[in-house]
Image (cartoon, rainbow, N blue to C red; front, side, top):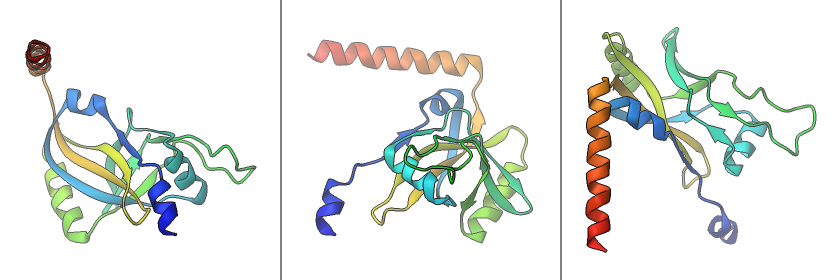
Length: 154
């Protein structure tokens, strides 16, 4: 068992587009309710968070448009790739998020998905505010300046 943990592949899938499109206000780590073939695909790293977003329904938080590729070894018991999945947070965190989510202009988006030490799939979600075009240009300028400084250091 201890040997299997050392050889386990580290899964850390990020949504790079989210940091460009949104300004993060708060971050939370949530569990995710997955089926058997879904967790196997996540462990293989076959997940896309690009179009994913979160929403509330009847006081519970769900993630939509997160693409988990069908597991290659499964036969006819495979899962639907973009089904809605329930996120697992404490009631206090859900109430806090829902009250902030009702404000105009705020969204809840997944930032990354990872496997924790116990082997459970977790999603890092962020309460975010959309950036304006000039904010995006400022970020690009900062990245270019940092890249130039890194080149000069070598």
